[in-house]
Length: 151
Image (cartoon, rainbow, N blue to C red; front, side, top):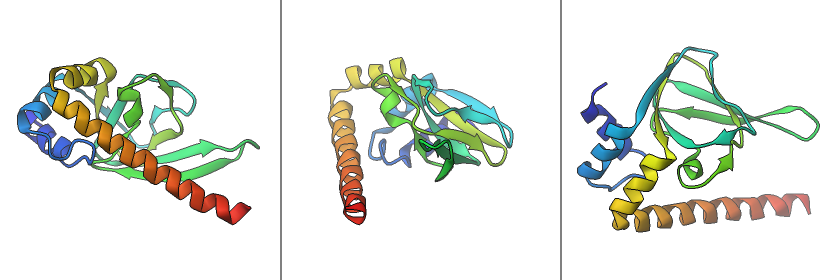
């Protein structure tokens, strides 16, 4: 895939939707591509996260570990999915393990690259802040709905 393909892919990621091509080009140019074969682990739950990954093609099974040691299926991430978005902004731990379910490729966006984008383009920082707040609000709302089931 070329730079124009990466820009097109990044423009489909909800967090980056609506960003101008020049801003996406900066991100795509500074990002790294990584190929994984079926069964290969992209990252493990509990490890330190210093980047986010956009799935370029392929798919990943996401799992987490419950307190009793059992594994919980967290779903599948396919092309256009952004994994570990908060890791592009702040030091966090991975909340799940991601394993390729087929030959796959990701675009790795490291924290320094993303922070540079936010510093150079304050309008992007405002947009990203609003989208992350929306995502967190939606997650909290869904958690409240689940809490009612267990009360």
